[in-house]
Figure 1 (cartoon, rainbow, N blue to C red):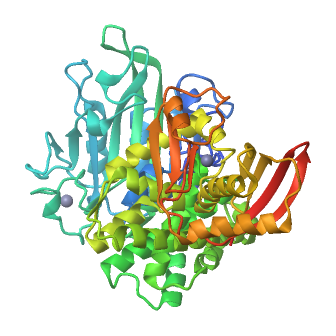
Figure 2 (cartoon, rainbow, N blue to C red; figure 1 turned 135 degrees about the vertical axis):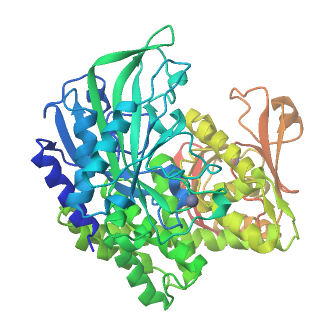
Figure 3 (cartoon, rainbow, N blue to C red; figure 1 turned 180 degrees about the vertical axis):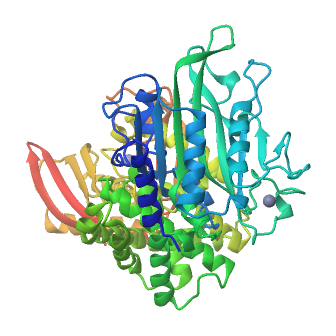
Length: 620
Ligand SMILES: [Zn+2]
Ligand SMILES: [Zn+2]
């Protein structure tokens, strides 16, 4: 059974043989491209050359590109979606065109990999009357000739759908939604001057998979039931849009081919489950089977968990290799999310805690040949996976307690987007974990509302103003959130114990500790420190509610809120109150109740300037 390593090697040799210069895979983190977080296709790093810039390696290049698609995270769990994959690609910059391209891929599949030509189906562009782009009859004709060489009479079929079924066809015309490529979308959506063109997809038919009528009455190559799998797409960049909406032919016509390595390997093995066809994924699954005592394929839910762990672990390893670290923004957030989802599934499968790091050690066996750095760095990468799992388990424990108390025990029937986002922001609760907990406990969770809140938050953190106002809260983990609430309790306790002259001069919070600077003329006595500690801990034990309100700065001041009134505020400010104890103008975030924050302890009290004291404290 050909594995991905064998298929990659065969493809690159096939490409080199026809005069392609082989390029190394570009980084998973795009260079000089601020518009996307990850390299998601082989074409992405080559866009400047497809737009006309001469490529230093010449007019024919090929490679196998590491790709990550965050948009597929929620699809992972079936037998053919992964977030990380490699894309086999070859490009012609004004060199060969349709005839050579389609023949080359067909020959690779049939003669190179031994795939039965009867299992191959293709699609071509049906044309766009409005824009005056003709049907791609040229490609249809080339395909007919190629199939004829294998003794197959390939019928060309129009208007195929789940109503019509296959109609005995092998070559199918589809519209712009399936068979047109441009950066802007279909022909109509393209701005003037933009290049684009028709494409031709190749599908493999798994005859052992029966059509699933949930996807429509009849099966056809673009049906999502799993009987057909797209294994390659040749884009023919031959048009440029005119200002009048019509299209001109480009003088330099390009080919951009991409095919998923794992999918091609699955077709070559006639194995509809790419997790069985790709050795690195199957190695992780086999090791997880041993540790969990569960069997892959025995139970649908567990099988989905095995797949998610295999995919996310491999993706995490390649991200860490690319220098990405888990964090709460952008790439780091995606990585953190992958690891957190894995931890949750590992628990569901009954894997021992911290098993994931060990499971990653099987990856160099498959990848050291092409990506030697994976082998060199795997120990360090595994340690980073483990460290992130540790962080998550601490957060999770705290968050789960909070969620149980405030949602499950309170008998709530629904969770708004706002509320759900709170658990995410304060405890790092993944959205899908809340959805799962909701499903298990009959609580409806507003996932769309959560997404809206999340996007809003992303904008705010980009603007940076909220973070700045919140006192240098760069990190929004559960630990920092609790420490932030503790800072408010400390501030009020200092005023109660030492007097109303106490005023905040600075605040800095990390995941480990809080630091609070305030106006006070003398060193605090051990008795004063003990009294402040005691007062803060009493408020934590009382499990007080924390509420947020919006009001004008004047209203805030007259309501007795503490705040730096010398600063410029906007028209409205947010005020956080710890019920009956403290009230402060603040951007948040805070815990919803003080219970479960931990035990507050002052580590140090010292001078930082004339009349300014500094306290360092922790929650234990
Ligand atoms: Zn189907
Ligand atoms: Zn605050």
